[in-house]
Amino acid sequence: MGTFQVAIADPVNCYSVNISAHPNYPPFHWKEKDTIVGASIDISQKIFERLGVEVSVSYEGPWKRVLMSAKQGKIDFIPALKKTSDRQEYFLFTHNEFSINPVAIFVRKGETKVPASLEDLVGLFGSINAGDKHGDKIDSFVLKQPNMQFIHGLAQNFEMLKLGRTDYFITGFYTGYDYLKSNELSEHFKMAFKINGLKVHNGFALHYAKECNAIIKEFDKQLSLLKQKGEIEQSINDYNELWLGKYKEH
Image 1 (cartoon, rainbow, N blue to C red):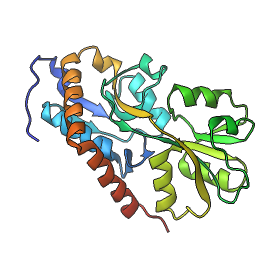
Image 2 (tube, helix red, strand yellow):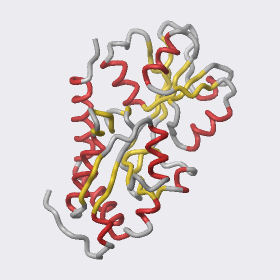
Image 3 (cartoon, rainbow, N blue to C red):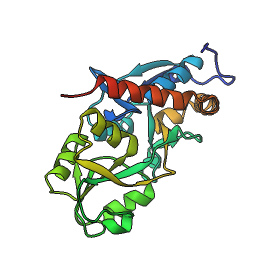
Image 4 (cartoon, rainbow, N blue to C red):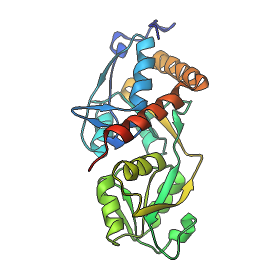
């Protein structure tokens, strides 16, 4: 992909961007050594390169710290995150979504009664990865559950479920599936049901968005073009295979 300048000149400081993402959300993004890699990073870097924007990718720590870094102006851009009403207070989201990211509800295998809807989860003990958002419908449901636990990390959430301290775990379908497969834990858990149609967008921090409107508009156009060409889906598939092949724990 070649580089070119956008038609409308933005201020010079718009032509460098600091990006980060969730450190444990494959195949979209995950921590590798001291940086973040994944399909969302791959696609974002390609687009910024076409726009002549220099990219710096950094690992900022846990997900809550990444979001706080964007609020504080340390991070300019976060790819592939859920667009929620509270996040729109400090992010300008791209019009085009990055991808569809279904949400899955995982339970222990062997349970006699398997929930089939959010309504079936009422009264049960659940967990969600601390800091995760899955769209207003699911987030609203989560906040109304008195027995919901907010636990850091996929490993800890699945461990609590395995020990019987929770009855279900809500997480992204790809993320949960990849974690179970790569760690050979599929015999202990199953997906009770999946909620489709949920999208992840790219978010520009407001401090960047206020000055860099032309770049953001062009970024959105390029995102749409890559989506139409199937490059985003291909990147997700490629990084999914990379994660499953390279990060298998024994």
